[in-house]
Each structure stands twice: as structure tokens, then as C-alpha cells.
Length: 130
Image (cartoon, rainbow, N blue to C red; front, side, top):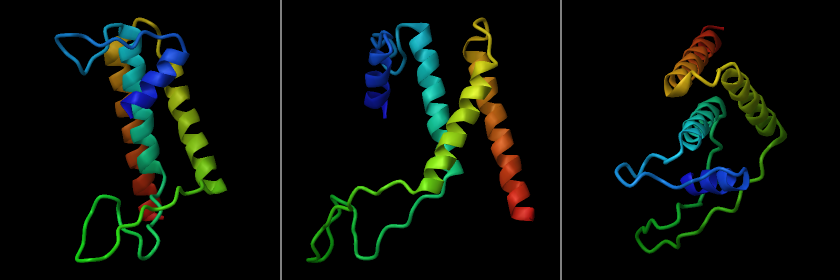
């Protein structure tokens, strides 16, 4: 996940050099801010889309069982409805973060993430009730 973010960030012109004292953080604040947003978008999107079930008989790569061959699952094609959900979630996250001003800092990012989590929880509760 981090390598995908760094590839995207470099293409977008951001410096992806990490801090020596804290290797999990980026040296440049704006890159660190985008990393937090990236993680929030992925977490928000994972819980909003149902995970597809594995086809019967397909085992995870790297797991060995008693004499059975291990097969890799084929890359799954994204269903049109799943694509629509992902686009909706991405737009929702981008809209939430676009309301931040430049002085909000990481605290503002965390506040937006908490707001998205509350909204998601309320939607899940409403769905389970109805």
C-alpha cells in the first residue's frame, strides 16, 4: 500500500523521503498529510464495499495443506456496481477533505476521518434497522 502511495505521490511531484528518526513519517508535512488521507480513503472504502467471496476450491497462495495443490486466485474483475460504490466513496472522502483549510494540519485531517467514521457507523445502523 505504501509503495503505491509513494509512486502516486512522486508522479504528482511530492517528495517521498522519510524521516530518519521516525521512518513511518514523511519528511515533508504535505506528503505526510496526503499519506494520512490516502489511508483514510482506503479504510473508508474497504468497509463500504463488501468483500467478494473466494471461489470454491481456491486456496490462498503460500498456505500449504495436506498434499493439496496451492492455486493462486485469478485477478478479479471489478463489477460495475462495485466500481460505482468505490467512486462514490472516493468522491465522498475527497469532498470531506476539500472542506479543510491549509491551517487545519493533522488535527483537521483526524477530525475529518472521525466524521467519516461516524457517518459510516450511522449509515450501517440505519441499514441494519431498515
